[in-house]
Image (cartoon, rainbow, N blue to C red):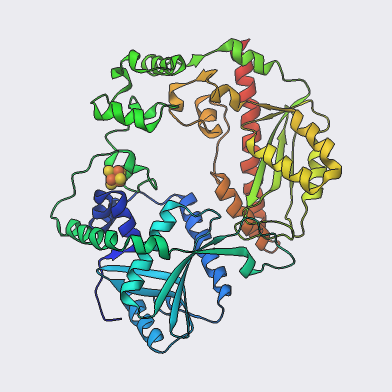
Length: 487
Ligand code: SF4
């Protein structure tokens, strides 16, 4: 390894591959980036936690990122550690041709270096592979004795025993074959990326499908600000991006400008009319059919699921969906059940769910996918309660059907059919403060589980119950709204 300067990190190179403008802005005008969403922050944190855990695959290494946060210092330190034949280095840092990469684990034995890149995912995506091939390219050109890089993902079939066995939790695959085929590609692409950085002006690239692939770009606020007005074609739901960009690129930027003959599905035509007239499109008879399946006594149910990348309970797998909270709201009462899962308490959860829903003939839910998955898991876990759990499931009436099937469409929904959005448009009076997403709820739950009894634990508990109960209340109010509508 020789001393070098770098101008491109792995993440900025991936940006370049997605869109040269995004790359240029990232390097020269980073202040224009959109604010990182809480969900994205949590996803990054999860990735970091898994990377840290994976160090147990090769314990006792030296963590470069703990020694310094400065990239050039990390590079110099890696160089020294390699010269000293350090057997295991975490976050080893390399530079070749203006590109700097860090590999999660670098293992040295008998003159051979093997690198491991850890991903907190079960699947190997195309992006992960490209990412790893770039790392391979840099290491191959900068590290004597480098042999291979293994993309290391989580083994979805692994079932935890008393403790986690890191060797069984992760599975690895060599990227050598793909990476070797792409060496020339990276040589060329890096030169192109450097040329972009030498430009004096922002590359003239307009919005397109590339804004979403492979990741939603974080310069949306800059590039899309004049596009996303109330009548933008991109507000239309159920119409693929291909078609939307076809219209947009042909100059059809607003919904009014779309020729009706261009829209094949009659339901989509109704959505267009709904936007133009700014009135909802309603199929009352279809809504009535669904509402007629509701049998008193009725309550609304919402459930929260915990899906930890690292299994936390004996007998569970990575990312297994484990229900931890349900809330029930009827006209006069509210109830809930929150379990800490200190031990595996899924059986108690199932028993409570059966008990607390017994008196109702209908359980209103909003998008039953998650609830049904949770019940399926509980049935597998506690077969003795299978019939009772099936009975709970059979009481579900899913109000999301109304929106998914376009029995009701309001132009203010645009292409967002979340309960929160619908609830706001219907002015149900339910306000969402605190936790804003299922991922955030999971994060609060992990904090709640970890903390000792005290103010912090109580706060997390209250926020979780409040978030879940809000959804149950909003679902109940939604049913009222729809009932009044079709009266
Ligand atoms: S929003 Fe689209 S056009 Fe703008 S920088 Fe990002 S990918 Fe490029």
